[in-house]
Image 1: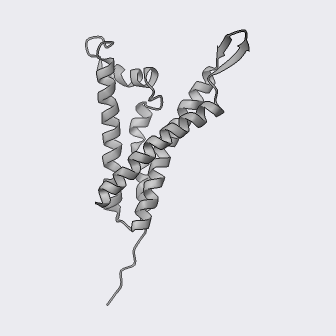
Image 2: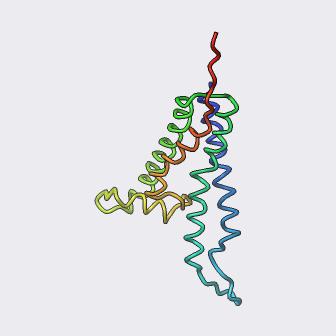
Image 3: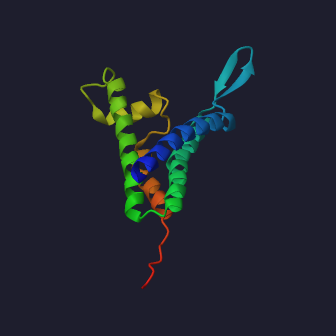
Length: 155
């Protein structure tokens, strides 16, 4: 039950973080500037900043929230590891599989190396990159960092 609760906390906080970080990011880093008369200019640097902002939020926020749950329930490092590893792996696999399905008609002879760039550029998962995939380790370490050392009572 503790694992399911932890996974639900990560899932809910994941989607809330994604939505709120995108909305906040679009406000802080507008991607286009109105020149008047229906003309706009694209601000490339702001798009890069937005992607970085959302990526950092997605790596940190859900795992800080689940870390607070881990701390409150006084769970072990092993529990924290399982609570964080499963969602990290599942989320990345689900996005890769969906990207493969979406990109299948655009790939040349199943060039699998182009799936992650396709997802990063052509889908709402603008934060998804090779760096994001490998930064899952950081997310796991954040959740584990909330584990408190328990004093064993001697009898």
